[in-house]
Length: 335
Image (cartoon, rainbow, N blue to C red; front, side):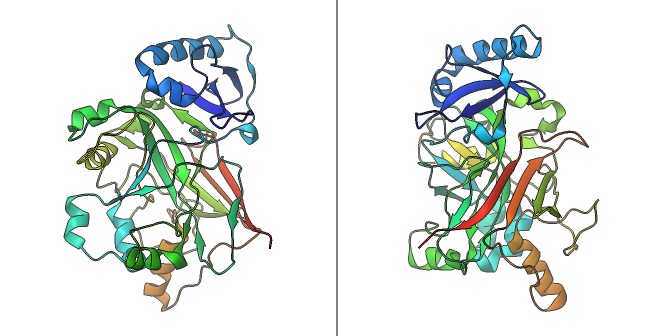
């Protein structure tokens, strides 16, 4: 089944079930007022939501048109947002930018950090920056929303806790990364609000695209209509989502509604921008610049600037976007 959150007068929005073709939706208010409430009582809510989904897809319920522009992030605010480092190729390419030094740790155990989750961005929200010189970057990722996980969880417990899958844009201010890591307690100012696709799917509804605790779909990134990349999220993921959940739960319990990111999607290749229609490309600008420096002696691809438009979507072949698109415009904060 496919779930989304529509904006209303409340901070957690209204939970809706979305049709398989993403064209219609129906309120799930009689089951749970918002997604967090459904996650808190998943054993009861999930079967009822699945039945509602079947009625919508079967034409028993007319529903209403689903407009992604009216959607919030599936969880507009979450108890916890944890981003991981599932793709070692990404770490190798941007190691100097991230200020990371311990190579053995990165290959044996995934790196994770806790991001801000009190105000997560909707798929059509602008990316607002305070200055044009912060080296604004996008980072296309897959992510999962989980149920409660106990401390020192096993892989089996971690796998069983995965409730929903989606994609996200983990926005980065690259110029502030090193300062955050060297002079603070970790990422803070370098990581503004993360944006999410309008729809989250249960793993079973993804079919063969969800296996081995990985999303096996290409995630397409465009900037101002130009293709930047379409790496496959299931390729090169050294640490799967079960690994990331186990690592996050090493010393703490994880609450239902915790979001786990898989890290910037990265497939190994020697391409540079612009890429061909069937190219792999990049899920962030920093990687493209690193490859350019190695090949040409200098970076040629600029970071984002006000007025730029970033679109991110996961596609199954030539079909429509599976989760709906993240489509954000960069804006400079007035004053």
